[in-house]
Length: 120
Image (tube, helix red, strand yellow):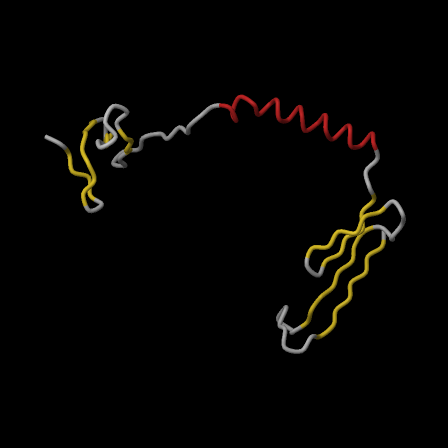
C-alpha cells in the first residue's frame, strides 16, 4: 500500500484553518485491476473484488436481509406511553376526531389553534 499526502495553498479559498487545500491519496498503487474513487479532495485507489469475493458478499447480505425481514415487513411503530405525555391518533371511524390517551384516560376531541379540545 502507498500513501501520499500533499497540501498546497489556494488563493481566496479557505479549506482549513491554515487556508490550505489538502489532497490525499491512499490505497494501492495504480494498476490495471484497481479503481480510483474520489471523495472531494481525497482519492482512494482500491483493487477490484474478485468473483468469489463478490459471491461471498452477496450471500452475506442476503442472509442479513433474511434476518431483518420480520422487522422490515412489520408496519407501524410502537410508542410506549409515559406519565404525563399524551399520545394522539386519528379515529378510524371519523377522520375529524382525534383520540388522546393521557395517564390511562382516553378522550376524543379536535385540535383548535394547536390546542386539544375534548368533545363533550
